[in-house]
Length: 286
Image (cartoon, rainbow, N blue to C red; front, side, top):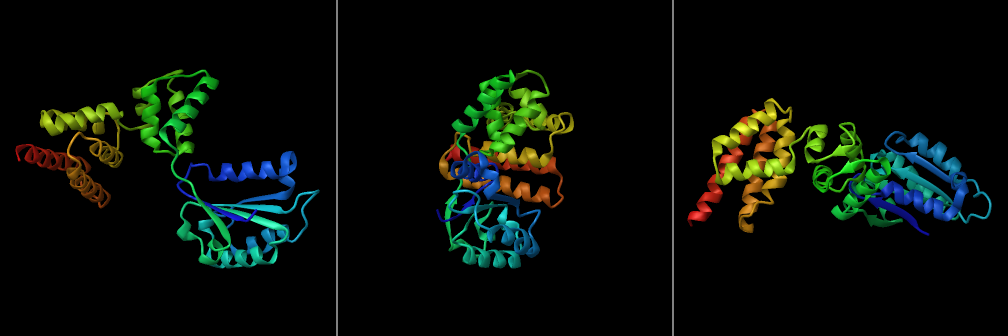
């Protein structure tokens, strides 16, 4: 087995896969031959020189062919610590293997990358996330609608850790969980409601859509930043010609940037929807 480097977005199973490999290699006594560290907390060179080196230099317990060091969030390690780690990987290759996890592979120095077999973890597909959430709900005695599960996926975008947390938060609202309960629990707008508002703004009564957005922000307590992020996702799903979607996404991105810079959130949202309406209307006329 070579040294391994797992990278990809949070909540996609990197740490779980490393622990599965550890259990597969060592069985029920896996903790005796495995050192697990979170490199974001223990990221300095002293930890590498002392804890990791001390662990790597000793022989494995029992009949295990090698010991295993699991370093989570390795891209948060300092450059000096990574250089020290590279040296240890060379010195103790006969007795120790390393599994490194990172959100961004660019945060790992090239000499370490070249010594590892690299695997990229993608966001989990919708079917897998919903199937797992449904299983958890059944085990916990929750009644969750399909719309609620899809809303959780829309909110978490393939991050299983966030999806499970979202389901747990929504469960505090009651044993029966629908799309509205998920939206209230997570502090955002239900996707179906937002789609209706955007369609109203684009092809119906713009003033009605503006009033609904004002109510969502002022009375519903939804933040402008979260709302503009949701609008971005929904705009890309509009039933419009594909060549228009880059322009629509750019309009929403400009509004997002302006809000981050301190502009009035509601005005930016109204303005972006007005520009989107104008582009779509012009395309229909032509």
